[in-house]
Length: 292
Image (spheres, rainbow, N blue to C red):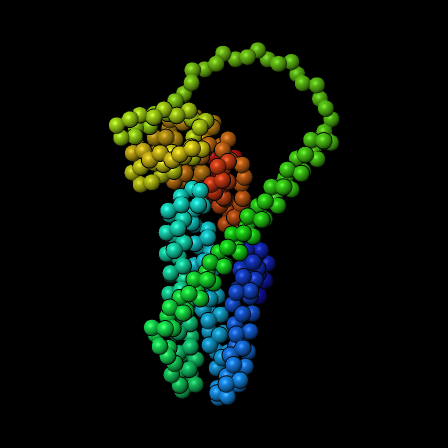
């Protein structure tokens, strides 16, 4: 019982329980009563329990596939970071969501009817399957929009609170006289990173690089203006870039410390890093000592 209580006290579990309540339990209850009223209005006989079985089996099936929705939201890149992967991954997740929801719903209904000595099947698969897919697609999109929207609102409120706290602390701090300015150091020769892009070579200032991301035998070098695909392993970039300015935050991500504008911790100990171009990348707890 104590383990169940501690599990329920997690904010993430409570949030997804509210998602299920809003998108499954309440609508299915309303639909069941609406079906009963419709059958009664048209003078068709139907057992009272049957509409509730139809609707609640769909609601329970939705609860079983909610982890897939959560996974797709947490592991799909943002539109600004990779638009094609954003569209493709959400499309595949929506199709998988509908297929799994329909399969779980059918198994629950067949099991319930079988326990009552009856059988269950769709009346017309050609009409029912497209109808169910459209409903599942709309449900999936609504859940994603609501969850992502709420997360952005929470991050925005935290950012505003941090800005307000910083401004208040600055206003309350006494004004100190600045120390004498030291003699300017002798500037070091600029460091450039060479990228071989086919028949041409591109030279970048390390400060302009926001992120280097592993892509198999290649690496994606992300700047504020473009993403360059280079046939070099991530380890070579880590050895070449200034270690004080760049940190390995994931087995496939090397990030510019100055590009990080926000750090959000997960319950697992992993983190989400928001960069100044709006991209959100994962940071593993294994590399936390290199980042901080």
